[in-house]
Length: 410
Image (cartoon, rainbow, N blue to C red; front, side, top):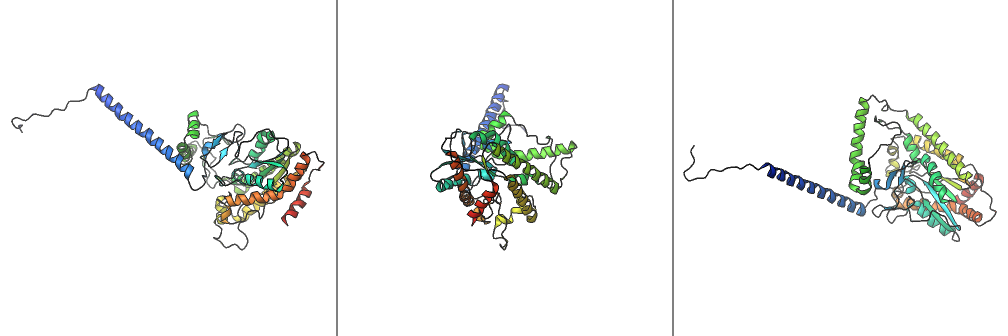
């Protein structure tokens, strides 16, 4: 068809190579700026939410670092969005001097997340701080410091190492050990363990860039836990299957738990021996979990009902039996001079208001444990005070401490 008379045909002039490259550069730059702005916006939003959230954060990866001897250390001088602070010595709490003053009784608490007390944050005090307040109230003539060296995830082996690496350097008069939950938990093999390309007990390496991101980007740290980690585990599992690894075979639970108990007994025995050799008093505290009370209606305590699921669906009868055997290991290890086994049954009621989850205390539970421990430990601290002031107070044997604790319980 011929064009109408007088019309001008349209002509498309192609862009020159230089203009085309410029156009692509502008588009890529725009996309990059948008991506950076979106990432920064998401980072700001994540930080704002973390600081103003209404529930305590259960996961705070930026406060950990791989330790040369321990599995994890806590990053010194870090304030986690106003929820808690790690001091310059690398443990939770206010700033103190590593050098103990001559007139101070120093108490050091070793343990995992139940000692760090992950749910008692913000204005709520973890039980070691409650204990400090209670001891100062009960022994008013004595200056007392209670230091919280708890590291979430730590086992009795980690506490054994921590005692030698950090606690003894702080020159404590009394060490409190609150351990057994993590040892028992880690001894229960998963129903379907995944194959892995790593060697047994090998820690996954990370680059300097990933390390920087973990400490400086809350968005990345949270994504690493919830997205990147699971994907990496799936990849390892697939590659492990192709590699013919036999690590995915299920392990007998009974044998694994017996081995875990034996390791725990060995570790706490070593802790007691090291404390005694260094003339440090030791209190081994029975770990408290919300076991259902006889006659308690089902459903009246959700934390009690969730205990079995928390421990890999282990039935409650077996779980009670294992905890009793762990308690027995603590009691046997405390059979020495200036060593005490502190039974905590009844310290914290089995009710939902006292627990953040089936393992960790709520602020109410932390307050209950700290106050009750203060009641039991005050006589021991008084004896330590007599020794510190140059008195001739004899070492308290386990049998004597048991009588004292029984009297306090009445």
